[in-house]
Image 1: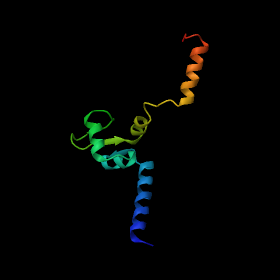
Image 2: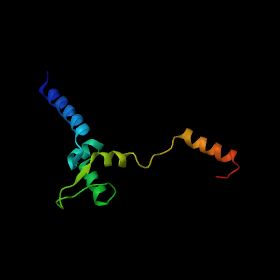
Image 3: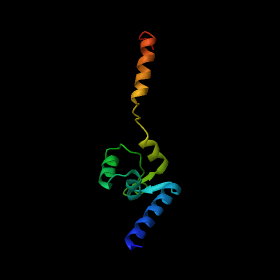
Image 4: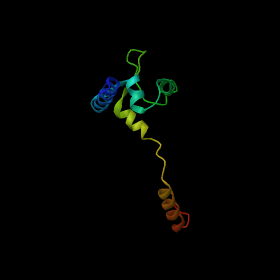
Length: 96
């Protein structure tokens, strides 16, 4: 097998195992976990938009569970859900 392919598969397996078992992630790990660039993750931390920790004042660390919760915030309703809400609203005569 191609050495690069073996190395790539090994890295994928390592990442998947790491993300399932590790509670605290580094900046690099968090960026890979979220599928974003490190620079965008830095922007999110500098703006205070994403939960993170700086125990030594310099390096950022992230709690994997908090990152998952943050990623799932601001859910956008589906068209079917919005239609159902509209129908319910109309059937009640505009009263909540």
